[in-house]
Image (tube, rainbow, N blue to C red; front, side, top):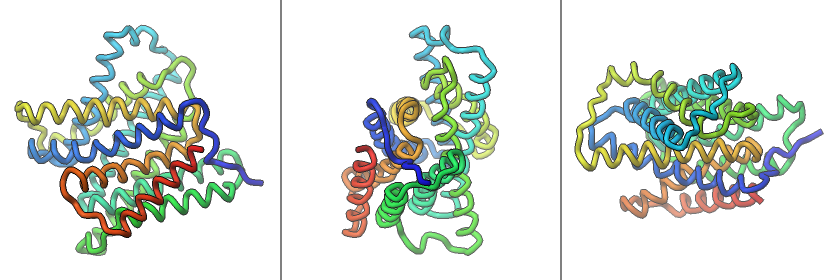
Length: 297
């Protein structure tokens, strides 16, 4: 007996998740720019991203009165702490993987295997094997991502390659777990408080590691503006949209929508930074867009 893990995204969850994936794609450039402007190591950038994103979301809740409606149950507290720990683990392992391999390879392994982990987790939970079109969607998504981001010669040692790939797989497993966990709502706990307090907790977990590498942030307009954008748009807003979409969409479609992150980042690099994308890369981009579009339908 099989189960279709791609369909169905009900209500407006598909557009919401697609927008979240696109906004995540702008976060890569913003994070790289912040690191270059402030001379920050990747872990420090990830820490600032979570702390600023969570801080902005908490401030919005305080101004709009959302804190008064926050449930005080153990289930809500457990969800926020678990989500925050997984967010910190995801960001930390990803940037650690980038230390050993290229950004493209780390992204390809992380984002490419995440839908696979989600499909396996859903199949284990439902005790049904994935449907044929679910497997086809996964295969097309992974193939498109490989064509888009693959670049040989990005590591210098076998040990570095193994370490980078293992960290990327752990990163993907963490975010897949977060996706499956968030798909099961906690009564009374809305997506925004989950995002807000989860990010604050995740950033706090990364802070001791980031402090070792240095977290000095120069107070200059370009640095402050980039930090505000990174914390608000591709972090607080994007994760809130992602968690909101998960309330009615299938977890696998949410994971497939996350494939728009490397696609958006690649296209922005071509348009804004003058990077070159080969014909094979454009074929991968088209395959990713087609996979997400057909899965949404």
